Image 1 (tube, helix red, strand yellow):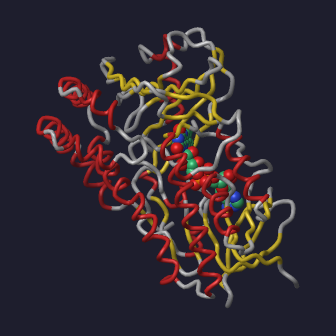
Image 2 (cartoon, rainbow, N blue to C red):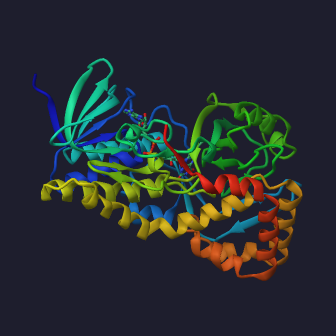
Image 3 (cartoon, helix red, strand yellow):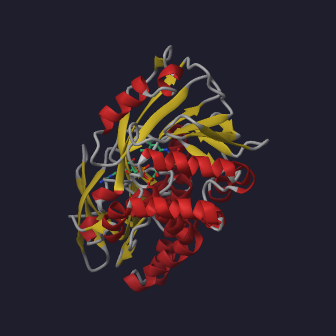
Length: 417
Ligand SMILES: Cc1cc2nc3c(=O)[nH]c(=O)nc-3n(C[C@H](O)[C@H](O)[C@H](O)COP(=O)(O)OP(=O)(O)OC[C@H]3O[C@@H](n4cnc5c(N)ncnc54)[C@H](O)[C@@H]3O)c2cc1C
């Protein structure tokens, strides 16, 4: 029996997968991307909100139409309804049409020579002398041989477990719900809105992200033990501010539900012949759940490492470990700082959240953040804020209050499934 063969097999055609493929093709190794769905970018569950600075550093040039809005700041609502506004005179973030963006990246990957296989789910793998034999299910079930497998299958779609890599601990995920609406009341389309409160989005937050055309993406994420469907219903119908904004709104799409890994990066993202990227490696900002920019950045590093090791004829774990060194150098510090902050704030009772907002307002943290805050590389911002004794003490007492969850969460970020 003759098998299809590629140097690098990529699981999943999201931002991570296409980015891997593009980088590997630049170094002239053969690449096959295997995507389980029939259309790239669908179903779309993401808000597509990215920092312009970091996106332009790691992402491709975007054609017109993919950017749905340019955002100048954010209104953060405390559980008691008091708010802090962060504002810059020029746009700091973009809202992307995430499905179109994924298709754009996939087109670039295909044009660079990568083969894209739709309706092709990677369902298992077997080690061989030269790499792996991967099992593809779907209308054209088959087996494909590859030298390196890159798992970019997102959160929960991960196949690297077959290769023995740890999976994100389900307790370190949040579950999200989001829909598209139009005809909202009292929304400034320069600003995203973020809503905190254990009564509405336990363990995380809710959001409203406006598009230029008057529509918006509205969603929440909540800790795994809470029922996200119920929380979302409660948020859109009962939240004293959100429910008013949505009173006359027309719902454009049914809610989409999806997990987000927010426990900080995976402990290990390589083994012999295998790399993991993006949500599959938990390369996601633990504070906001944003993973597009980091997926692009790490995808590029994974693609380059995979191609280099194939050209060297050495796909051992020792050689592939350079991928992990590289990405940790670029985002490791920021991910660790964000993970720490998230654990401090996890399940914090509302009175403490209200107090943190109050102290932040008194300290004019909003002005500092408006001037200097980086929405992607938050490590330095977190460090400089924590140098202020009052804010530091408030955060510390808050973290002590959430110590039981802090301890239980701190130990095991990953698990064997
Ligand atoms: C509600 C919500 C809102 C978000 N908002 C933002 C935001 O505003 N900004 C931001 O930066 N991030 C956001 N994120 C996070 C962001 O969507 C992810 O971090 C990002 O999509 C990760 O990209 P990825 O390529 O790793 O995975 P994905 O985009 O999930 O792509 C994985 C692909 O792999 C495919 N796949 C999975 N398993 C297999 C298999 N076995 N075989 C073949 N194919 C497979 C899937 O079908 C999918 O197409 C949000 C996430 C959610 C859930």
